[in-house]
Image 1 (cartoon, rainbow, N blue to C red):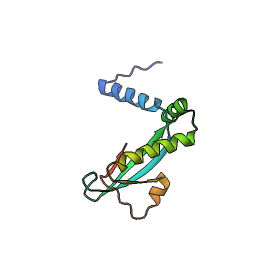
Image 2 (spheres, rainbow, N blue to C red; image 1 turned 45 degrees about the horizontal axis):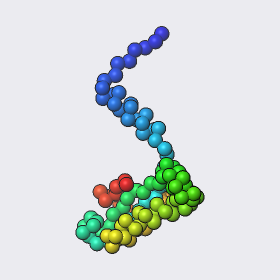
Image 3 (tube, helix red, strand yellow; image 1 turned 120 degrees about the vertical axis):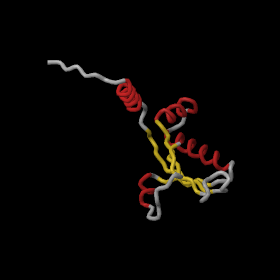
Image 4 (cartoon, helix red, strand yellow; image 1 turned 60 degrees about the vertical axis):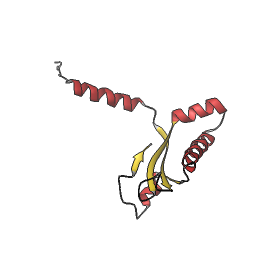
Length: 115
């Protein structure tokens, strides 16, 4: 016997969003960027922590345009990100999520954001 399920508009919206999110290309490289520099560009403590993701689509675009390799694409995007912050006199240190979670002095804060 078939069942009829009634969905509200918000239920339908939530389901559609979930399907769209699951359909997106998975990230290939996920790094944690620790940015240090002048306080006028960063929070009062002078440090910002961001999640930096390079997707398969980014890598494919790089390879299509420059006939490069995946490693060259990753190097290109991390250098671009570093250069973006260097214009503001900031230094960027990249960590893998595993390295980041191993930091003993890390305390979650509002300074963590996704890019």
